[in-house]
Length: 125
Image (cartoon, rainbow, N blue to C red; front, side):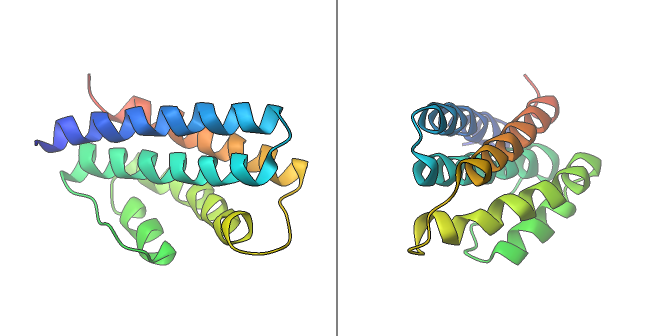
């Protein structure tokens, strides 16, 4: 597959996970919503990196993923702090016993939406 096609596929996945995050937040399923928001953000990051650099890394390192985004042009630089905040929710939503609050879930969904909107502007039609 080409980087252009892969960028579109990641953008589509970002949208799907964002919609899932919004729906689960509305149903008070805050951990699921935050987890889906994180996955949406990761796919938005991948879409931006593929659209701007032609490649994206598949690292489990959050620091590496944020750094990769920062290296993908002005949009990536602008998205990096939002992505970093969003990744900060991942461990609590998915692994810790302490639950995500309604406010935490709303924040994650908002950050994922910002990332998706930015990715839409970067990924060419």
